[in-house]
Length: 460
Image (cartoon, rainbow, N blue to C red; front, side, top):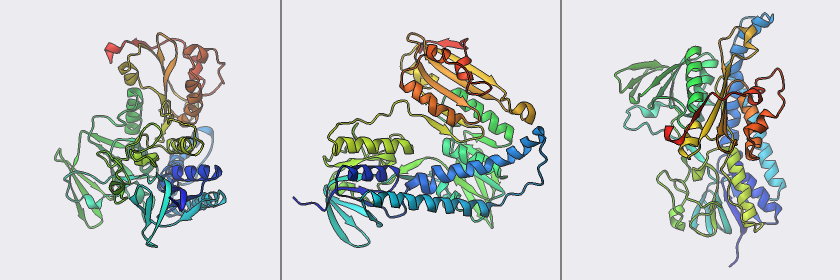
């Protein structure tokens, strides 16, 4: 049987791009189809633009803090259109770099939608042609959910996609959701001057994160003036002129200028043709794969958000590299999803790696917990009443550090290095034997000598 390509990748996001380039480096004839733009969610409408907006939202507090250090800051003025224009310019530059790198690798770029016809045939919809590939890699990512249930007026909500392109900054915004995307955008909009309300159906934001982190961030957001309304769902959204009226299931009415849904993401498999090839999918439409990212169809693989495993860009890239090693280097490489560091870019940030306290207990560990809560040195002069919290979870029997959770400025930068230590199996004794870098917040990691409390699995 003859093939047009050794590998055909559907999706030009971070995972698809990395897989295509690495496979081409192994001598494979590769094509990648992308119908929107290169870089995927992360570059175009996710991590990168979000982080740029996070930086922008910090300056309001930075200007306030400067006074305590002797600076006189003139009247502040923020221009939304300037931020959006500069962000768009940077995203365009990055997308062009992605395209150039793919082309330089010898990969053919096909800028159109690709759909699967059978296990080895792909239909290119715009040019109406079919190609055949020895292997197909699905890397189509995910999209924001708009599923607000039976809620009339749900068509009025925006998602993170539209938030990056609003024609003007709303004076008031209501954000639905309690995960990291909802929390980050609530902090972004508040930091840029919006009156912000976060509405969440659960009892506490950031489900799945360590309880201390959840509590610290909830308190910090409340102190900043962000209203958090829990145990609520939307019943109806009315649009009256330029205003929206959100009715909750507790007979409340929230008046706002914009409503944003940040209630999770859905794998992009609709209309992809997976059923024609016999590829199994889950209840949410996610592609079901084994530990090497292979579907139930021998020559079709899937990586990244479309598999709904861990929806993080570095994870998709790691899965891409493991796929190429397995298929093209003939070195079977299962994907490693253990000890993946992650961050919530709130104000302050949360950085975390390893097990939460609850997860450690559920896995049967006896644990010692070390906590350090303190006022950062900067705020002794800024006057800001803000606290940082560092937390280590240690196996009481082996002394191995099972998890590290940080709430505070630059938590993401710190946790990346901590992840290396945990990946190497570091013990609490290793942390204690490391000299502190003073003065720094990170030194708390190596100066916590007295455990705060211990727990047995039965206390989960």
